[in-house]
Amino acid sequence: MKKLLRILALLVFLVGMAVPGSAATALVMDQADLLRPQEEKALQQSLDQVNQKYQVRLAVVTVKNTGNVKPGAFANVMLDKIKDSRLKGNMVLLLSMKDRDWYISTDNNMRKMITDKAGVKALSGKFLPALKKNNYPEAFGQFAQGTDELLAYYQKEGKPYDPADVFNPLALAIAAAVSLGIGFLVRRILIGQMNNVLPALEAGAYLDRNSFQLEEDTDNYLYMTVHRQPKSKESDHSADSTDEDHGGGGGKF
Image (cartoon, rainbow, N blue to C red):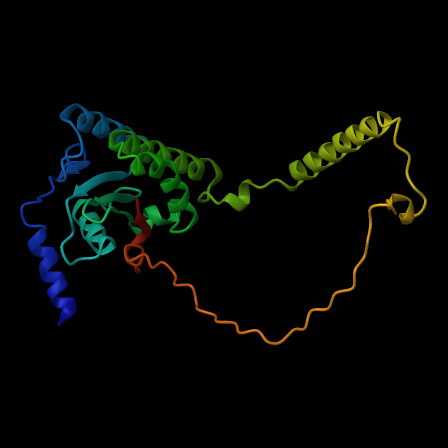
């Protein structure tokens, strides 16, 4: 029953948000009024460039709130409304301003190119800094640019971006060898400049017998009481809407 009510609430909430059929007019739906007209136009152009370049469809949707519907589920519905199955992939970035939620929803084609974990994390790392500063034009521009970079990587490498693939063991070994060499050289220089200090052969040579006085003292250990309380984990209610037809992820900003 609760699930049915949520679905009904979502349908009611989406009334009036009709999405035009053409890609050029379905890119930006700024229901929260975060952008000026010229900023919205510039964003549409940026998203359309990526769409034309990679034959995908990107959309940015902003709302004041999602009612009783989870942001992830809301984003999935918006994706289903704007996606074109003839294209190579479809993706929606949703912002819900009431609780400052963001969510990226992808279809299965886009999911292959921008994965739920590494891909969404890399993409959100592009736009989240500006989003947290309420610089929405910059954030959405970074979303478009980050998507371009991830799709270009997939096009060139034939696989989705993964930070583990970027790691180069040879480069790490060379960097470590250079660091050790520089460290050894600096150490030798510093030791060479210590002409007034000589190492002592015994530890007693470092003891100033006129200033040291040892007194015997005894502590009696009685008991100890330890109280442990599990640390609560932050749950992200907006990041649990992936299913067999939708990928992505989200969080707070």
